[in-house]
Length: 114
Image 1 (tube, rainbow, N blue to C red):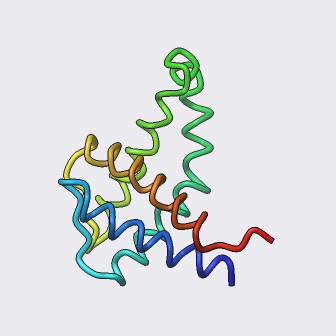
Image 2 (image 1 turned 180 degrees about the vertical axis):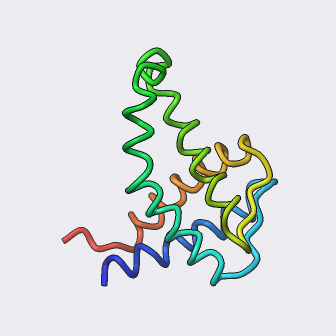
């Protein structure tokens, strides 16, 4: 049940990001659900590999390169999905940051801490 609620909150956060960040467009709630699932899977499967491959750059930039990796994954999801559009990598980076903040806030409000 917690997974389903988290997925719905991620989709709501994605809709909020599309409203707040220029260059990101979500056509419907169903597209937001699919995009939230794809972004979640990319973060689970692809992100650890990218973090290991870019570890020297991440260390040199004191961890700031992780924002670029998150933005690239966000942009990549928009590139492959229909109904979820991210115009530029910069919009992807900003969108990923805003998406993380909104998801965190929604989860803190809704999900039970037991």
